[in-house]
Length: 390
Ligand code: PMP
Image (cartoon, rainbow, N blue to C red; front, side):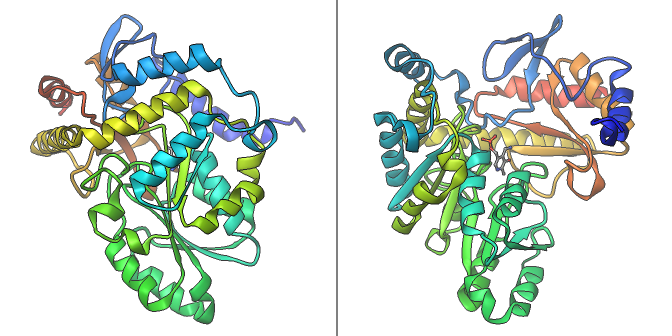
């Protein structure tokens, strides 16, 4: 029995995908020119499969601040904040996030994955019960498993199903932890947060929302879905990442003063190295840009409408609502792979998402727009899809 025998099936499946042409699970960008353009092999391509929603990965200020921090403070912190100490910039960013969300406490983590792991695994201990949307991100599932709580999944975006399961919990509902996301990363749909908040008001519980894909994208000031729906008061903790609209790496949680205790009790906070000074400096610059430039969000949504409508007119089956994430449903895995490669040949890169990564056993091409895309680039993406329509 070999250590890797248990992976035989998945290895065979992946090999099939690799026998001809580009490997969708190991794409290498030979160059990245901007937030919207790169090169794969000898082909210049439009990047339409990122999470760089506000297109800030090449923002001049974010780059300059990152470079300055690199020169002034070095390449990395080389340790965790608890053991090795925080840098002033970690604390400054926490204050800025706390002010941006108007909440008493913000904690910075090394990635968005670690933010979810750090907050959820600590709160969702073996005595807790957690209700999670079935389509929640892997980091939320992993966090619940690490914490050891009782996990109850409710049907994706089905508030009635959540309510039914809460009612069944009886008195325990009052201390249950409900976890949902803002925009869901694969279908671009959003949690029915107003209904969920209504359930929480009636039955109790705590509400955590992962705004990874909605931070910077939704809400009057970019705070996410809870802001857009006017229910921020009912959300106990907001979780997020620096790797999408903030175009860097790291994660955060904002919540009540009591959340400070996580700094002494959360293993994924304590036992990993803190984010590097250059990442933190770029995030601080990008956070200011998000606060000062709402027009980026407006441009993003104009592009989202343009792409969604263009693809809908071509007759493609898309996600349930217009969003910066535009999923195109494709029949089989094989069709998906062929389509994905043909799009690259047309100069457009999108994400190929196969089950189980895509919900409900579907294969989809996940397109995403960002605020740096020009109208011409959006039209080029649409034309590439038009050329492949048979
Ligand atoms: N939450 C959600 C909803 C995500 O989609 C992701 C990443 N795709 C994460 C958390 C993890 O974020 P990070 O990549 O910063 O670790």
